[in-house]
Image 1: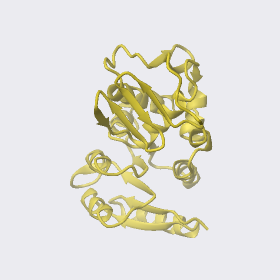
Image 2 (image 1 turned 45 degrees about the horizontal axis):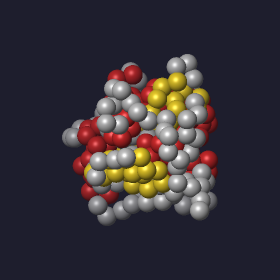
Image 3 (image 1 turned 45 degrees about the vertical axis):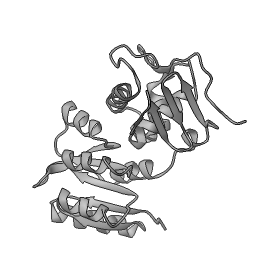
Image 4 (image 1 turned 120 degrees about the vertical axis):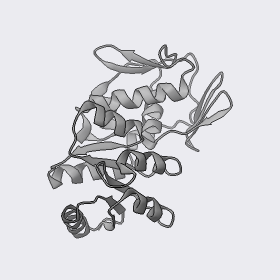
Length: 236
């Protein structure tokens, strides 16, 4: 049986009931709320393992709720939305979401995304890296902390996992498909837009000049490469 707790935030009562029934049958513990305000109140007293967050809700809405959650929590967030434009996905990922599922969705698709987000990725966790230091950029992989020019930079869980995987393969072009399958899971192997957005967010946070990156370089038609002359700090 699964032990994870999932917070479902959606103003559609029928969908909430359906998700709760399905997830409970699979062993998950489910908390329901119908607004972003209620979700933020739940987070003040509980620590769910995952949030399923609808974008179109009364009150502060899904994007604002996602941003508010990210101010104090790294809990994984999967956004659910009837809107499926590139702009909608970019806005959700920019706000700190880990994934995006379009309504109406099949429950098998949603369950696959849930498993991918909740499950820690061994290829990311078991790199053997402890840190990376280059000038004003300091990364502590054990503490999951990034400091640039003396200022702590807050990364979302996916931003941090992606950065760690790239740093663990310095100066090597990593294909988009491998990055997606390693950091997001096998069900995301075609979600190149997710990867592009998270790379852009990382550049804004760790690069001195995001439009002319020093570390996170694009390998055209392939993927991305972490460029450095310094060795990451590993075992020993």
